[in-house]
Amino acid sequence: MELIASFSVDHTKIVPGIFTSRVDTLGDYKVTTYDIRMTKPNTEPAVDVAAMHTLEHIIATFLRNEPDWKDQIVYWGPMGCLTGCYLIMKGDRTPKEIHDLVLRAYKSVADADEVPGSEPVNCGNNLMHNLPMAKWYAARFAKYLEENADNEAIFVYPKSERLVTDDGRQFFDS
Image 1 (spheres, rainbow, N blue to C red):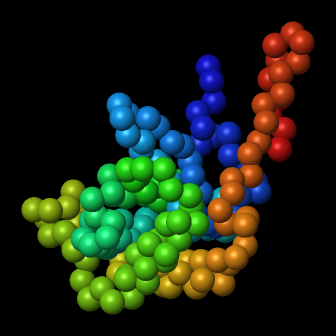
Image 2 (image 1 turned 90 degrees about the horizontal axis):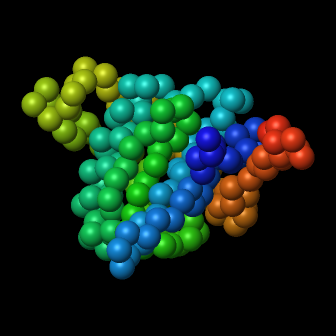
């Protein structure tokens, strides 16, 4: 079985940042999945689940209401490992081209007084939100994005290779 693209990233070397996970062609247009990595996998603690849920609500609302970008947004949601989120957009832009959008999305969390769509009628787990912690994580990541805007490592995935021996055995080598 082939290893899917997101599992071919060397998670021992990836740093927080904005990465192109994959680009798919659907008919006449492209759709790009971005890995918005907030913490260093297997090194830093994962994002608190209630805070991540809150970030999902606030940032999805921001992105889908952002005048210059809302028609390009397909999806925003957390990774299962809780180290970041996936952003799926129409088109094929580089991570650097969406840096400002992502930065503004995370900065918008500071202005939130409530969690949009968090009433029982709108949310499948409306009691699992943590706005103060979401603000902390968002501010931390926004500061990191600002301080590292010129650091190429926050935009380029460290790829791993799968070595195959002559007899078909596979080894995972970073």
